[in-house]
Length: 89
Image (cartoon, rainbow, N blue to C red; front, side, top):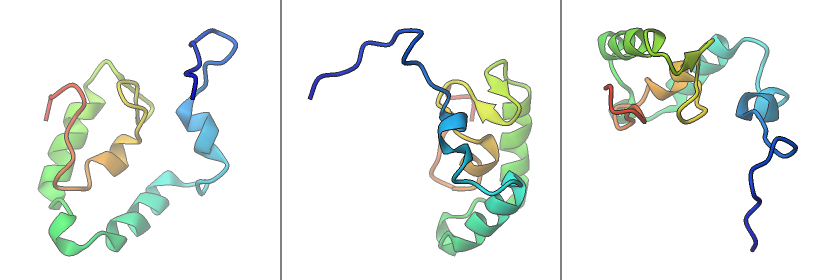
């Protein structure tokens, strides 16, 4: 398989790509998703709040989307085994 060379014509926004597949309210979606994780994989609320605070103060956070990896920060902070791509938490 041949890799595409990134150009202005073929660049895309991950958020735009999946926007149509997500519900209108990402917070409601995140709450439902959190309840689906096995209990042992769920981060505790104080840890999630601490992580979100770091994300919100990061220059790579844009309206809840991490520009380093393209994730929704509210979803990334939920699991115990996830890490910040810039190693800030």
